Image 1 (cartoon, rainbow, N blue to C red):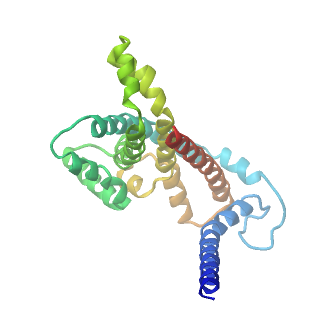
Image 2 (tube, rainbow, N blue to C red):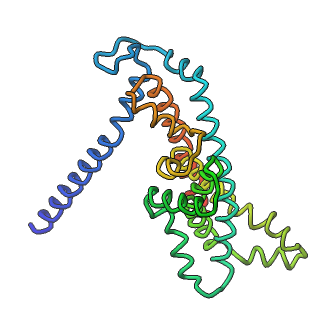
Image 3 (cartoon, rainbow, N blue to C red):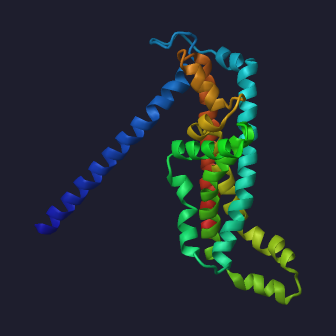
Length: 268
C-alpha cells in the first residue's frame, strides 16, 4: 500500500513538473510565435483578424538603408568581439589548465564575474573608464564591452574541454620530435576545435543581440538592437516584426549548432 502511494505521489509530482515546464515554455515562446505570424500579415495594423499572407514587410526592411547599415554594424561588432574573445579566452583557459601561479583560484572565480554581472553594470563601468581615458565612444568601444562579458563563455567551455584532454597525446607528439607550435596546431587544437567553434557561435549570438552594454558604449553608429529599440519608441511596425523573425531564426540556428558542437566536444 505504501509502495503504491509512493508511486502515485511520484507520478503526480512528475505530471506537475511537466505542466509547470510546459507553461513556462509557452509563456516564453508564444510572444515569439506571435511576432513571426504578424511578420507575414498583410495588414500594417497589428490587430486581429489576420488579413492574408505577404512578404512585403521583408522586402521593405531589406530596402531600408538605415536598417541594413545597423545590421552591418552588428555583424562587425559581433564578429570582431567574438574573434577577440576567442583569442583571450583560449589563452586564459590554457593558463588555468597548464600554469600554476599565485591567486589562480581567485582568477578562475573573477573571470566568470563579467557574465554574471548585469549588462547595465558592465556598461556603466566601462563608460566611466573610457571617459577617464579620454576615449571617444564608437563601435570599437562596444566591441571591447562585449568582449569583456563574452570571454567568460569561451574560458568555461575551453577549460572544461582541456580538463578532459589526454595530455599523453601531446607528450607522444613531443617524443616524436614535434616542436611546441606543431604540437599545438596539429594535436591540441584539433582536439579542442569543437569547444572553440561552439563557444564562438554562442558568443556571436549573444553579442549580436546585446543591448545594455551597447546602449552605454555606442557612439553615433547604431547596431541593429539599438535601431530596433529607437524605432519601437514610435510604435511597433510589421517591418520590425520581419527583421525580428529573421533574428530569431538565425539566433536559434546558431544556438542549436553551438549546443550540438559543445555536446560533441564533451563526448570526445
